[in-house]
Length: 227
Image (cartoon, rainbow, N blue to C red; front, side):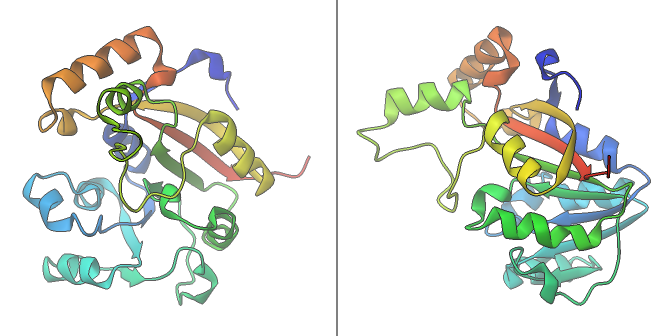
C-alpha cells in the first residue's frame, strides 16, 4: 500500500469513473433505493454514469423495487441478491473492477460480504470500497450544533457502522485482502448543489486543514498474493 501520509483527496464519482473506464465492472448496491428516482432526477445515479464508460456492467442489489425501476429504463445485467450471501447468486463471472460504493456501512456482517465477493475476483481485480468517514469534520460540527442530545445525528437511517482508515484497513487485512491504495474523498460537487452553504463552508475549512477530515474513504484492494 502506498504511504498514507500523502493523504490524497479526490472526488469520489470522478475517481470511480476513471478506475472503471473501459473495464468489466460489477456495481454493488447499484439502485440506491429508496432514492433511485430522486438520484435519476438529479442526474446523480452512479450506475448510469458507469454505464457510459464501462465496457461491460453488472449490478447487484437487494431492493427489488429499485431493480424494477432501473429495468424499466432499459438497464440490463441486474441481479437481486443479499450481499452477505453472495454464494447464493447464479452469476459465474469475474470482473476487472468491483465497486462497493456506500454500502459496507449498511451491512450487519461485513466480513461475510468480503469473503463472498472473492468469488467474483481474479488476481488482477480491483475491489473499490467507498464509505463515509467516521472523522468527517463537517458531520462533527453538524452534530455539535444540531445533535439535540443524540436525537438528530446526521446519519443515513439504514447505516449500522462508521469506518475510519484504521478500522477499514484492519477489516480488509483480516479478510485476506491487500490494500493497494487508500484515499479520502471530498463532498461531491453534485451534492454541493443541494447542500446548505454553511455546510459547504465547514467542509471546505475541514479539508483545507487536512484531508483526513473529508467526507469519506476509498480503499482499493485486491486478493492477497502469496509471499
